[in-house]
Image (cartoon, rainbow, N blue to C red):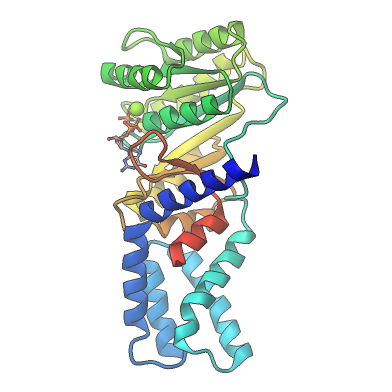
Amino acid sequence: MSFFKNIFSKEKKETLDKGLEKTKTTFLNKLSKAVAGKAKVDDDVLDNLEEVLVSSDVGVDTTLKIIDRIEERVARDKYLGTEELNQILREEIAALLSETNSGDETEFTIPENKKPYVLMVVGVNGVGKTTTIGKLASQFKKKGLKVVLGAADTFRAAAIDQLQVWADRVEVPIVRQEMGSDPASVAYDTLKSGVNQNADVIIIDTAGRLHNKVNLMNELTKIKRVMQKVVGDAPHDVLLVLDGSTGQNAFEQAKQFTKATEVTSLAVTKLDGTAKGGVVIGISDQFQIPVKYIGVGEGIDDLQVFNKYEFVDSFFK
Ligand SMILES: Nc1nc2c(ncn2[C@@H]2O[C@H](COP(=O)(O)OP(=O)(O)OP(=O)(O)O)[C@@H](O)[C@H]2O)c(=O)[nH]1
Ligand SMILES: [Mg+2]
């Protein structure tokens, strides 16, 4: 058992390393420029470091926390060589993240006492909701769980078809209606069907694009209310998907969405191919809502349970 677990962890690490490559290379390049010609960490180096962190999308508030920690260390240790800065940053960022709710899990799991476990996926258009649902369905299915998908993004015909493609690929049932039908009605049908089929996990896709924000939020509220007619405490998780490649934009979206509707967990996608992966550090630090998953590619296995220690490890390796 532990043998297989080790193999899996190694694969996970390789995927994560590959996914974070651009972020890491860019970051480490900037970092080495920031300390060029300097033997010790002084005010100049700290100023440069601040710029490096902000420009790596860590976010201003989190950057200031990190700089404070390093200043404290400089004051305590008197002499900090710049060649140690990488290691020190890694330690301080890990320590900072250890205080957050994000990234405590290592495996795709759901609570045992919720059956069916209802997961509703929200977020603005194009962030990777449907893809994340497909990947999640695959992971849950691998765990031996029975998964049912609900195509409650009825705003575009293509959205329904796209979820169907994932359902076919993963080989899980999907509940769908015509384009333009009431999303709450699709969600209701999905929960009914899930309960009938004795499903363990039900995942509901929702539209990111409606005529305006108020409409969107009202619709999400309505979907929740209608689902509760079937499963009293549904949804058990409202997962907000954010596109990590938009950097600070993802951050803003998280702020606005969490203000407008109840969100219980976060997924940050498209970390591969972007240098903005630092945003995960800022989001983990700034939100009470945990980052649960990260997307590191378009493939079916390119969704990972976010673990802050693995993340920091890959980030600084
Ligand atoms: N590289 C990369 N691409 C991703 C990732 N996640 C999603 N994508 C791509 O992002 C694009 C949009 O993904 P969707 O899943 O359709 O996004 P959505 O939020 O459902 O979009 P709408 O249905 O239009 O609201 C697709 O081309 C996906 O393949 C990721 O982790 N990495
Ligand atoms: Mg979609």
